[in-house]
Amino acid sequence: MRPDERRLGYALVGPAVLVLTAVALLPILAAAGLSFQRRMPIFEIGEYVGLANYRFLAGDPRFWNSLFNTAYFTIVSVILELAAGLAIAVLLDRPFSGRGWMRAVLLVPWAIPTVVSARMWEWLYNGEFGLLNYLLRATGLSVEPVNWLGNPHWAIHAAILMDVWKTTPFAALLLTAGLQTVPRDLYRAARVDGAGPWEIFRRIMLPALKPMILVVLLFRTLDAFRVFDAVYVLTGGGPANTTETLSIYAYKVLFQTLQFGYGSALAVTAFLCVALISLVYLALLGREYWKRMLA
Amino acid sequence: MKRPFVRRMAFAVLVAAVAMFSLAPVAWQAVTSVKPEAELTRLPPILPVDPTLDHYRAVLGDASFLRTIGNSLAVASASTLVALTLGSLAAFSLARLEFKGKGAVLGVALAISMFPPVATVSPLYLVVRALGLRDTWTALIALHAAFALPLTLWVLTNFFRDIPEELYHAARLDGCGPLQAFLRILLPLAAPGLGAAAILAFIFSWNEFLFALTFTTTEASRTVPVGIALFPGMHEIPYGDIAAASLVATLPAISLALIFQRRIAEGLTAGATKG
Image: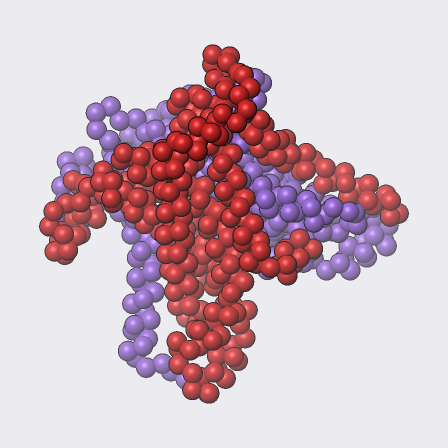
């Protein structure tokens, strides 16, 4: 029976593995192959050029600019999302009527298509008729209208705020689930011992949440680092490339200038960055987490 | 033990603030969608003075927008079906059968779910073009199914593992083969997990943009996100129409999310932590 079962096991996993290999693993290798070529598909140009694309990349200021933008976008938005997510999780970690409703409310930004949310925020940020400028003027915070998406200083922050709005709910949901594993008695005992809310948060909640915080950071960092649609639709990478992320730059080189060689080099670089970030988190999360995940 | 009034009020205010932050942009979109053209370029008033359904009429009377909705429904349903079929077979096998390399399969799936999509798009484009599949549903269905597969696999493997092992063994002792035990006993019991995985896969496909933008060129296969991103504007951007179209496009994902909110929250958490 055992060998039979093994054969069946492989047979059932096989199709899924085959699809993942064909559509995800092989393309990554193929992209690496393309990155060593000068390749322009419509002109049927394709020749091996070795590391030329990577040498060009190392001296390409637009690449470094996009890498910097991506890193800035990732770091700022992930920190804000984690902070807001923690605050919301702690706030909602008590029984109250309407808690189910709050979860539903939190799922709304998560479920909205990214492209739709980009167009929504584009309208909120509109310099002339946008709600944001109107509210700032009405409350006296800013008399001059701000050109959120046209100003090189503001545009990236506008994109970050949109991302925080869209993805904080995911962080909050995971952290809420993490807090539910803390036995209620622990809070009661701490209160009896005279601990205030801040101490309860620091000494009980935070240590209990540590693994979940790392998981949230892992998923959010990787998602933010590969950001494409949100920013592409909101600003197109402008103004003056100040919001051009690595994914957007690679995509433009691939499909606007059709340089498949150099575009693939940029894409592979994005992949390597993501892999590097994963490795760092892999080490931080520790063996226990991965054993439990993969067991 | 009752909390003091002031603290309860502060709590209510904070909860309301969180709800406001989540909903305000969507609410503004709803307000915009019923404002007549003239009121769009005027603030105040915030609320429409003379509400109109013109934008909805324009959008729902637009054959090419309706076509994108049809394309999205078809692509999302088909890719969900494929991901679920492949995913449930593989997940059962990973959860209950004995063989080597199970950790590797889950690890690779996890790694793939973290790929930046732009890293695979150049060779995929060349293959899709060579196969003559540009601007077809087929290409998108295959890609969406494949990239929804890792999450499906994770969610379902967890669900199958949570079903008591004894049920599976009892079925086997009663003379069921492994496959029969899977189809007759485990699959019906895993219905909630299948539901969660299906919703996550559907929403993924419904919202996906990068591949959809790359592989669709006309309205024959263009999906809703691409339609909304490229919303036609001859001279100025038609914000009222975009708002109406956005809400229509959001409806399927949001209703699924709200109806199945508990399952989705569980599925997302399990996918990340193996709750």
